[in-house]
Amino acid sequence: MKIMVNGEGRDVSAETLAALLDELGYGDGRVATALNEDFVPAAARGATRLAPGDRVEVVAPRQGG
Image 1 (spheres, rainbow, N blue to C red):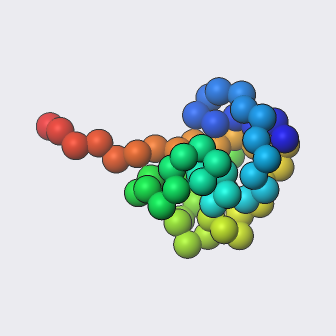
Image 2 (cartoon, one colour):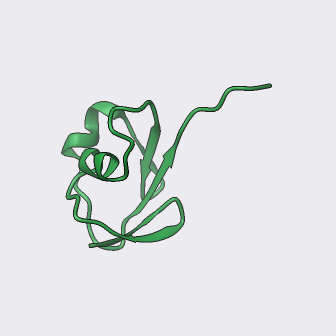
């Protein structure tokens, strides 16, 4: 299905947000996620279904100052 990931169009096979993170290579990495501009906690990613046209944001924490 076609979705947007961090502003870039992607064709993915994942049906849940957790599966999408695996497909994109994030695995169990510590990232923040949002679906259609709504924050999705890590515990809810496995139950969060994706649909064509969804907009997903994945943000990794950065260190620095």
